[in-house]
Image (cartoon, rainbow, N blue to C red):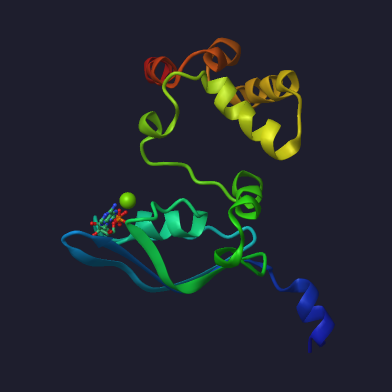
Length: 175
Ligand SMILES: Nc1ncnc2c1ncn2[C@@H]1O[C@H](COP(=O)(O)OP(=O)(O)O)[C@@H](O)[C@H]1O
Ligand SMILES: [Mg+2]
C-alpha cells in the first residue's frame, strides 16, 4: 500500500484548474451569459480537448483563463482559475503578464489576424525571449531562427525576417 508521502511524490501535479467559471457580456442589447460554470483540471503532461458547437464559449473560456478577455463588454462574474495553485483572477495585471508567455500561452485559431502584419515573424517570436527570459535582442533573434528551424519552416533565417503574410504564403507553397 502506498504511504501518504509516496502518493504525494507520484501523483501528477495539477497545473491548471478552472472552477465554476462564469463569463458574461454586457452589451446595449442586454446581457449574454457566455460561460456558465465551467470546471476542468489539467495535470502536467496532459492534453485536454474542449469540444463544442460554434458560439458555445470555448474561445471566451480560453480568453478568461489567459487574462485577455475584452473587458468591457466581457466580465468574469464568478469562478477561479488556479495556475500552479495560484488564483490568476486575483493577480494584478503586471503579475498576470509575467505568467502569460512564461507559464502559459495561447495559439490563436487565425494566426494571420493575431500576428502583427507589419512586424517580422522572427521579431514577434523573439519578443517572448526578450520579455520573459531577459535575452538581448540579438540572442533572442537567433533563438527565434532556431525555433523555426526546429519546426522545419524553410528557410528559417529568411522566413524569420519576413512578415506573417508572406511567411504563411511561403509555408503554404512549401507544403
Ligand atoms: N465581444 C462580445 N460581445 C458579446 N458577446 C460575445 C462577445 N464575444 C463572444 N460573445 C458571445 O460569447 C459566446 C461564446 O463565444 P465563443 O467563446 O467565441 O464561442 P466558441 O465556442 O465558438 O469559441 C457567443 O454566444 C458569443 O456571441
Ligand atoms: Mg472559438
